[in-house]
Image (cartoon, rainbow, N blue to C red):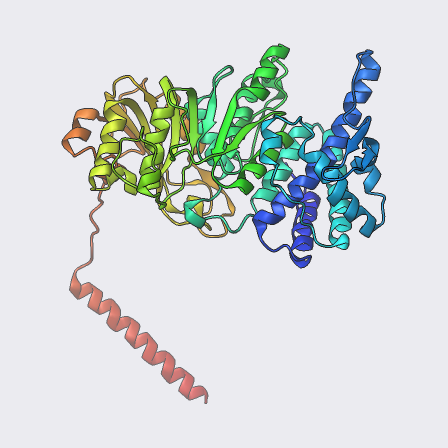
Length: 517
């Protein structure tokens, strides 16, 4: 959890960037991410060196030796590229040093052939003013001082740093463009609980944005390997633990951090932010690449065990660019992405996908073909209908979560009518006590223990034959029964007498006021 002081510092950081000439939130968060990464590199290297001195193991510092500055004949001591070194410089000197030396070093710090280095090739450090850089460096130092205070209070570093970065990302206000917007973390947590990604499974998000679903899956796995006495219930009602003290095999840690999570996005800025997000949460070598997964240059069919996604809504793609493996005859991205997810899963692979309500009942041939695909080629296990305010202030569209397994047979579909997600459903999205999320997870786990046949309840099963007979309609309103309570009204004569009495009281009041004048 972030302290109020940390939130105030982050808000101050945003204000500095805004007044310093960087008003686009995506650009600002990208530049802030670079600074956070520089700070973290210095901290990590210092810690590894300290640990090696204690254990006697040999450690090669990334800040030892010389660094050849690209496109020049000049080289510098890598020790001068540390955050702790350049933060002491005068403003103008610091800005030139970071622009020309530190940032080029950071861009290739993981090696020349890593995913990180590849995606950073065209990255640019564009903080325009020395004063802005000095202020940003000072605020970031204060933030990490707050993190250290939190650690003394029992919080883990990655947990607090991750919360800090999430709070930063929450300020992206340009979201919603082309149907893209960040998925609230508590919705991601719920979906991870339903789909349950496990160790050694390949997890993918084909439209990953800032990497929220990949991070959610990572934290879900860490929680599974954290001792019960080290778990804590978070503000959304989920048990959470990032220590993973029961995960002692270094090979599994390597697998988890380097070969488990895969993400794709067509926006280079979002890819870099996603990379930074995962790295700052402890995933040392994330596999996030710039690629349009609907296009012809993507070929990852039958690969992943788990896919979690909130694909763009209301977008479209040129018909000539659509990958030939996608069988739906449409250019609508909300349909094509579900088709892509089904293709990308291996047989038995599981998916949790957010779709707009129109996907569930749309009357076009492509809409019906997709629903038929979900029923006939997958085991469609559940549909959680979410209220329209979940994605405010970015969008007010009603949405649902589809949970399905590739292959198998759909016999019946479990529906849940979510009424509240723990936040107000207006543009402010303030925290409230009422939430269905923990109940959804609990009832999901118990869904086969009861009959769940009451169509007037929040959750119930619908046989697949009934769905087929209704033209594969998957809208919960098509099956939920409303318990109408007839309203009893008084007789008209009694209502008129009450109106006459009220009128008399009004006239008497007016007379009394006149007598006072």
